[in-house]
Length: 180
Ligand code: FES
Ligand code: FES
Image (cartoon, rainbow, N blue to C red):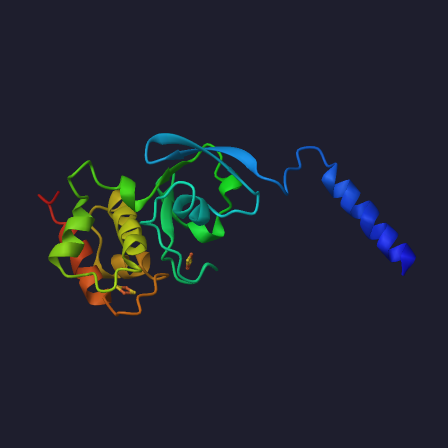
C-alpha cells in the first residue's frame, strides 16, 4: 500500500516536471475571436465554450449538453464548424474563432441569420446560434446545397422545439442567387 502511494507520488512529480506541462493554475492565452485579439487567463481544462461565455462575455454561443451531443455550442475554427464544448481553449492556438456575434457585418445580418428570421426558424432559440453557424458554413463551402446537403450539415444539431423544416427552408432560401 505504502509502495503504491509512493509510486503515485513519484508519477505525479514526473507529470508536473514534464517539459511544456502547464496548470493546474491559470495560464495566459491569446485568442483570435471575430477578428479581434483577446487575452484571457484560464485553467488548462477550460473549454472554448466556457471562455466565450465567461471571461469574453460572448453569450450567443450556447451550452446545451456540454458533452458533444447537441451542437448548440457550434462555432467556427478557421471557418470549420466545431463543438466549442469539446474544444479546450488552450488547444485553439493560432486558429481564428468565429462566433455568432462575428457572423454579421455590423448591423447587416448574414443571409442565413436574415433567412432564419424570415422563415420563423427560431422558437426558444437555444439551438439557433449553433444551427446558424453550421448552415452558414455549409453555404460558404457549397453555395448551392440540396435539401439533403442541409440535412447533413445540421445532422448533429438537436432542436427540442422541432424547427427543422423551417431551418431547412431558411438555409435553402439564403442560398438563392441575389440573396445577401
Ligand atoms: S453543448 Fe456542445 S455539443 Fe452540446
Ligand atoms: S428552437 Fe428551441 S431548441 Fe431549437
